[in-house]
Length: 312
Ligand code: APR
Image (cartoon, rainbow, N blue to C red; front, side, top):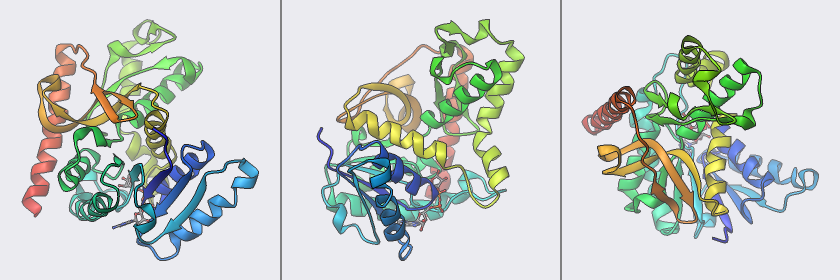
């Protein structure tokens, strides 16, 4: 895939950080920020472009309040919506963000019917379903960002605990984003050494718990917004795997069609990402506890979908 254009919808904290990272990594010829806020995408886009001579990238960054310049874009990273405030659960955001995602996806379908959508807006698993249904795109082209972020948080905490390089830490976190995520202890290793040989179970449990609440921990500090550096880095890593056809296996929210015994639901699972988007869902063996946790996670996502349906 020769990627010419990536549009980031939503020029807020996550979206603007995505745009800057995409440009610094030169993942497209052109990066466009789109937002409804008057002047914000234009101002941030121009500011980022003015960093190009210093950072040395040739990706043209610009901003707009409409979608016309995004016609034919290859990838859309969707971050538009309302961010979670302290005391607000992800599900509280449901109705507002669903309406935003419907309108955004309608524009994407109209102007770039062959594009790939990476959904970031929360509640992510449900917003990905809204985008899938609104766009009518195949599941290969509507993927949600969750597992890369949860896994990154988990890896970052393991690195701190063991005081070793993050480069050596491999981990896999499945399930829904946040409270019901499913960290797979048996797939977590440090330079190939199972984590269970390096840390006592109660320490591992504590790191898992901190990861589960990782989003809330940042909200607690920021008070007026939610995390954006790590979420943006995670979305851009997914885009990079697609743009460069790297065929990376990353945990992403995918629309399941029988994998892990489930269908008709977005859930975080290992995904092979390449030029066509989701190339394959990779099924892995789970022990009974992990399977139970994944099913609990799926129930939570389904109940949020039902809550949204009830609100319509
Ligand atoms: N079209 C385009 N942009 C929109 C629309 C819309 N219909 N509605 C809202 N926006 C824009 C807002 O104007 C704002 O600039 O989305 C942006 C959201 O930015 P922030 O409020 O800074 O939120 P952010 O922290 O970036 O989080 C965005 O990502 O991680 C998730 O939970 C987070 O759902 C939230 C999303």
